Amino acid sequence: MDSPAGRPFGPTRIPGRALALIPGRALARAGTGRIARNLAAVAATRLTGPLKALTAKRVLDLALGTALLLLAAPVLTLAALALALRPPRSAGGVLRRETRVGLGGHLFELRSLRTRRFRLDLLSRLPHVVRGDLSLVGPAPLTPDEAALPGSAAGHWRQGLRPGLTGLAQVRARSGMPWDEPALLDAHYAEHHGTGLDLAILAQSVRIHLRAALRGPRHPGKAHLSDTDHRLRGYSAAE
Image (cartoon, rainbow, N blue to C red):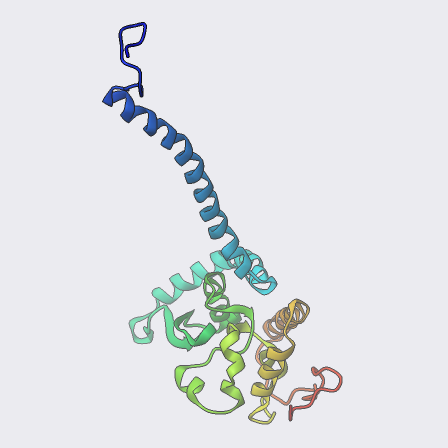
């Protein structure tokens, strides 16, 4: 039966070109929303992933480490130039390069200036703090051989801590103490570390280095602090 217009009743036929256009527009509308949601999810994952990995300790390292590096940059640059212009007989390169064990047992190349004047070698390691190889405060970075030795000096707790630019052992240990005292101090730090302890160690480290720079070299002696002064109530070295 024909329609009043002379066309047969039944499904309306749509030209092939129009048929191709209509689904495409519908898919474009639906796809745009889906793509936008997917992109937002990916962006959120990429943003929250690193944020979740940031701890208070790492935030302190990034903020204070960057500020210290900016302040020390002019002095470090001058020291590097002075080392580069040394007479050939004293040449040994501007930087000392040593392999150390970092977070999770990963190896990294520790670079520092070949001078200990005003502890510029220590300050020259600040890029490692910003990069994440080191923390401002932590146990001393070990060589692979030292890390392979059994005992508390290379305990399993080191796997979860970044080695430090300074640490409890550096500010409390002195020559004349038992040989294993730095290891005990590092183990204690691993058990009780926190932002408050880190700030206290940093303040003590700055005070020690300033006093040493003002007074000049002194004969090493035994520390006046006992080996239990830093421990919490009830702490035992046998634990």
